[in-house]
Image (cartoon, rainbow, N blue to C red; front, side, top):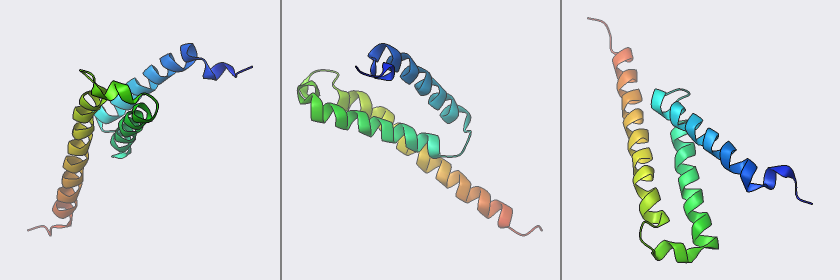
Length: 98
């Protein structure tokens, strides 16, 4: 007998709640850049899962590549912009007062 948490009816709502919480963390910038990295890792993981277990889905219209690539590029953009802002803030704080 499988554990109850293996059931898709349990996992799907929990994954949805986790996705919304991760989105809020990214939106409000809480806890630094790790939520963006977690979202990017999740997108890459889901794409890899589809490539391994259902590769025929990769050739259809609106396939996982076209669905996951724009959010993944947004994660890269957010990460790079936040990194640049952090570097700029460090320079601003280190500048001597005139």
